[in-house]
Image (cartoon, rainbow, N blue to C red; front, side, top):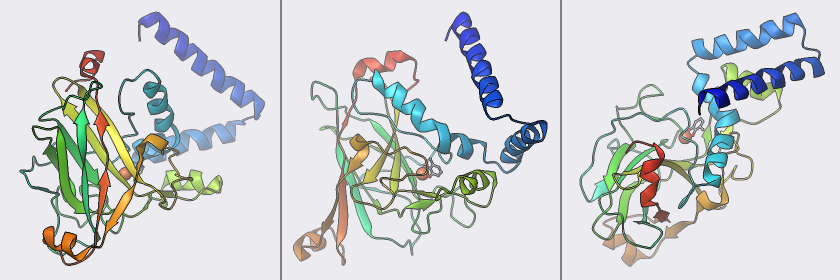
Length: 270
Ligand code: MBD
Ligand code: FE
């Protein structure tokens, strides 16, 4: 954004908020409540949560308008850079007694012409069966259910993990206070987060949801997009279960990414 555009946008933001204050006759006491809320949010470490729940989806939707290839999604507040690079066959780091149904998350990454993107990195992070993220919530080993995997010569990827549950955002802090005042629930539908990187395509951030899952139509973060909802397929055939070396039915989620090789030039670093 150049300087004159920045000036114009900031003036418009100022004007919009001033008009809002006039419209709702925001008193000095109410103004103090609002500033205290923002300060509380930062003290509680929820500044990213508050912004991401209310405004990140709009920003990604706007960015997607001119985007070639698979749409992007919100990053949310819980990404941590530097997850372990895994080796094939890929299995997400997990505890010996990790609970949850086994999930194979798989698909192919190609360019718009259908040529495979070989050696693309998928940096994946997700909640455990209690809806907790390692490195964020206490009592979970570092990097649990966080890891980086890579596409093969055909552009294919597959990683073994668990099916995450719907996620209830922290509701006892300032973000929860706002949502409660608005009579909203605190849930996000079950989701997998992923950033995809390749020197030719740059980096993109996605998030995948499970068709038919709870809260798909009422995500507290308003971040579900039809193009990011994939079918969670249950595999119960004993032969298939045995072939996977498993004992119980498992699930597969397939999502193919299309990434434009020219997108690397838009300023997103790989
Ligand atoms: C999450 O896992 C998330 O993805 C968002 C957007 C907000 C809170 C927790
Ligand atoms: Fe999340």
